[in-house]
Length: 423
Image 1 (spheres, rainbow, N blue to C red):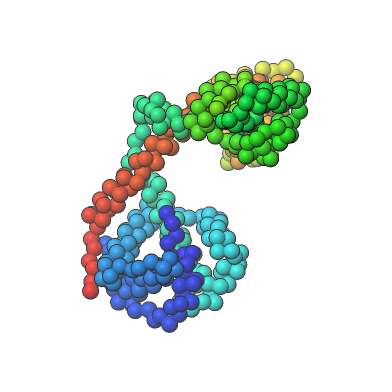
Image 2 (tube, one colour):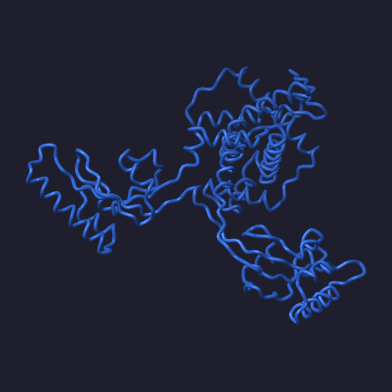
């Protein structure tokens, strides 16, 4: 949701510094009210924005009606967010305000200073407006997550569709060398072009940097950029290039491609896409001892030290986990947590897991859950391409439905509300 009045509030207030609030009620919305001063302030903000764009305003009665309806919908959503217990953390609010200030070319402190020194505005007012809009955004996200349903079959159908295939297609970064041949080229011209082509190929085969070879021999516009065509999907490449690149691996140089314009050499510099996403994972098991009302943190640590000593002396890790671990889910499995990747565990656990040597019981460490020891028993590169494709499809399908479902929900919200618009 865009912060409509915020970015231009300072400038708008400078223009309209003489405003005096009118506290008459303009609209009753359920158990709350919108004041005439709220309507007047939003009207000034909109007028300023239109003036800045040098755009014509609609008729005053139409504009006022639009503004009142906008304020009604904001009010309904803000009240619902409040009742739903949605809260905005101070850190998140400050980060958002810092971004708004940065967009205006200001530090947060300077932004606050300018707002507080301007008539008809204040930093606290802007902060409350941004907080309100962030609450509305979170409310909308919650409601849409409840209303939008995407099945596994929907995902599979999308991935098979042309749109889905385009969305999940790999991208290629190509290096390109063109040895140009004019339309009026003679046999000698073509022979000379082939000589240049062969020299370029020999230099590439000898391991010379592609960018240098391109700058030396290529007639393409990208020659002085090292022949770099940038990142493109296959459907964004010339057909002859696309046919070749889909079977190439990074650093491969394709066979010479001949077109009416000349000879082409292409090298696959890099490839990225959801068909080759692999992440490092470690297979790990652990024992957790939690402090309780009758077991202090120091005593919990001492208990785990005793368990660790037994394991190092030859006791079976899995047996000790089954008997002693306070993590019921993994304890039943001998402490096994399975294959774990980055970001799946709390920071303290992940730090120890990533630094632990294979098949070695770790030192005792503490997390928010209690005291742990762990052992890494394997490591691998795991292909998560299918999961990534599924996530892309889900996000695309969600985005397709979001606007329509949001409009439906807002209409329902408006229809169910008590609204009394007063003249």
